[in-house]
Every structure is written in structure tokens, then in C-alpha cells.
Length: 471
Image (cartoon, rainbow, N blue to C red; front, top):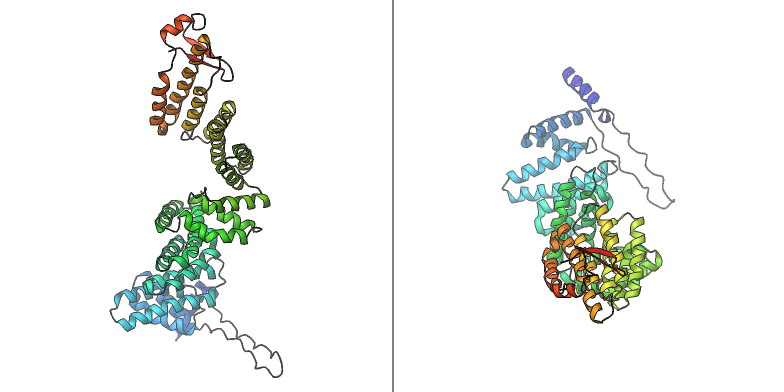
């Protein structure tokens, strides 16, 4: 007995939080004379035997002797479940090991139910733990449903995983987020008409949180989060729920019902943008309503797309100007480059404002260069080249027709530059080089205007204002 007392003292010193039992709470006073008294449940007393058994099962688990760990663990779990968090972290390993080791159906069922019950009890006694709070434990419960019940408890698993993701936010366990999408997708496949919105919402929260984890430079698991984000994105892509018409069925009414709910409108607009359904009228309406409430780069860009679809390209460019300014404030330079390119394209292709188009294209190139990005610059140089090739600087008389061909030298310069800086546009650039090289001034034409073509270089005037090489 003396040895046992010394052991208890040593364990109490090692685990001071367990050394003292908590006193029973005082029963609450009756609310009224005729009401039955409300008595709060007393917390289990942490005895010396509990402290000893915690140490015994913890050592056995460390040595992976799960069968030996079970008896002392079960005693603590039954009589003092508030003794230590390791009852639940070690208990999960014990139950999992015993479940895998037995072939008895009744024992498997008991252990499966115990795995779920254990998480509920952990919430009861340790749900306020700052590091592993209730929302974290709900994630463990959701994973336990999957591990021990397969596809027979998908609704229960999904509810736990969803609550965990909402509660933990960017601190969510990666596997909780991944399994939330897996389970929600399985439920959606069983009833796509009723559960499409639920699946999309679950995918949205999981993908958003995984992206936050993947882009956090301080997250040691960022690479894993990035790979898992790719996985859930692929699940969503093949699900059919990402179909634009399906999204419209789900969100058309939601946009109207939330016309003053900025947060919801932003969420809907971001979802449409993510799945590339930005030609949808529902997307346009969400952006327009959100833009009126609080303009952002994304809502301005959405309004620009809507205006372009309606053929109002002046309005589209005006919205892109707003998007550019707002994205600069938000320090989203890659988005800035995209908006500048879009403004360049509509200025060139639809409004035939070539000088304006070049201005936007050059601005886009500068934005990409500041980010160290080459991809994207090529398309901008191609726009500039096309603007040059579309320009007639001189009158259509005999001399003017020859001089107008000089713009093709300047145009081809830009197509060459495009493929040099951005190999992704090489095929397209080569096509334009071959097409427009045919229109260079011939030797005979240059002979007819010797004063204009003296030397090896030539200055293309007008709004172009560039020096090129005579070819």
C-alpha cells in the first residue's frame, strides 16, 4: 500500500491537473414552488486509481499494446471520463485496433457505437479545450462515422464534418475538409435534385478553407492542402453540379431573395467565377446587386462582362476601369492584368480604338512583369500587333498605299516579341507572322519611294510612333 501511495504521488506531480478531484456542484434552486427541483449532474471524481490507470493505458498505447491497454482504459472511461484528454486520443487508437482485430459481428457493432459515444463524452468533458474544442471533436466524430459505419451513416457524418469546418475555419483538419466533400458528393449522387445546393455549399467551404491553408506561407502542411484542394476541385468538376444551368436553377431565386445580403451575393458571384459560369445572367445579377451595395474588383468585372454580353462595350470598359482601380487597392495584380487585357481586347475588337487598346495592353504587360510572369504577356503583344495591322495611316493614293504597308513591319515585330516572351502563344504568333509578312512593301515599291526607305530602319508615324526594320 505504501508503494501504491508513492506511485500516486509521483503521477500527481507529473500530471498536476489530475491531482485533485472536482467538487460536486450544488443543485439549482427550484424555479417555482410547484416545479420539480433541477439538479445538475455531478462530475465524476478523479480517484487515485484513475490516475494510476491513466498512466497504465497510456504506456501500453505508446508501445502499441492495445489489448493490454483496454482494461485500465475502460475502467477510467467508465468511472472518471473527465480525468485526462488522453482517454479520448488514446481511446480512439485502442478502439480502432480492437475493431480491426475482431471478427465477431456483435463486438464490432459495440466498438463502432463506442467510437461515436466516446466523441460525445469528450465534447461533454473537454469541449471547451482551447486547442481541441467542440468543433474539432465534431470533426473526429464525423471521421469515426465514416471509419466505423461506412456509407450507412453518411448524413450523420456530413453534419458533424460540416459543423467542424464552420467552427474551425482555416484551422480545420485537412482530412475533415476532404471527407466533407466526399460524403456530401455521395449523398448528392443518391438524390441530385434535392441535394445539389447542399453539395455545392459543402464544396465551397471546403475548397475555400483548403485554399487558405495552401496559400499560407506559415502552414507546414500547405503542400498537402494544395494537393487535396485539387482533389476536391476535381470531384466537383465531375459531379455535374458545376453545370451552369444547374447553378442557375439553384441560385436564381437565392440572388433575388438576398438582393440586400452582400455576403451571400459575393459568395454566389465567387462560385460562378470559380466554375467559369461568368456568362450566366444569374452571375451578372449577383454582381450588379453586390456592386451597388459595395463595389469590389470582382463585382465590377462581373458588371463589365454583363455589359459586354449586351453589346455595350463602352460600359464594359468603364466597369473594367473600376475593377482595375479596386484590384490595385486589393493588391491583386494578376487580376489587374486580366482586367487590363479584357479592356484592351474590347477596345481593339469591338470599338476599333487601337491607341486605347495598346494603352491597356501595355499596362497589362507592366502588371505581369511586376509579378515576374511571362505567360499572359504574349496575348497582349498580339493585341498590339493586330492593332497595328488594322491601321491605315495614310491616304489611299498610290504613295499612301505603299506607306500603309509599313505598318505590317511594326505589327510583325510585336508578333515576334509575343512568342519570345510567352511560348504559349507561339503557334498563333507564327500564323500572324506568316499572314502579314506577305503584305510587306516589295523591293519595287521601295524603289519607287527611295527617299522614304533610305537606310535599314524605318519610322512608322501616326499614333503608332515606332521604329522598325526594313524587310
